[in-house]
Image (tube, rainbow, N blue to C red):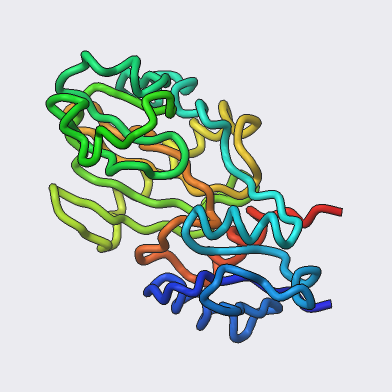
Length: 244
């Protein structure tokens, strides 16, 4: 039996880096074809998937995979000790009268997450399902944002991706590294049992408030930024479970 990881047919820097990282690994990354269909003869050998969330869901059904991810409302249940901001979870229609808030989809990305003066300003609002579930939160200013690929309560690889209002994958300072590690350890001690063993956690620094949890994302569809692709690949594999 081969250890195949089904890779999205969409060529991206992340998927290309994972493909290179697999060369000396026990895994075979295969894009198959552009129809999002894994041939029958390969389905038993597919142990994981990586790509856009909808692609991953379709392939997981074909190949008998369970894709690990947090509960949909998970972020709203985290203490403000770690989020440093109020976060609510509910239907889009419950937020129609809200103004000047941050809003994002809880599952598939039906619209771009961001700060909106009015909910109706969302592009394509008239076509959205008002019963869809969303997160809303007060507006904060992030000075730094960091992506962490986590396996068995340990950060395997991490990368900054946003600093001072611009995209930035530069290394953390020694102090930032130390403070992130301390914050993560305190967080994971309290919430490890609420998370799958393989997950991507984003942390950052809020202006005037310090380190905070941004969100959790499934490893099987998360971008790498400057993370070590070999280490990220191990987390991705463990984020997919082959059904017996």
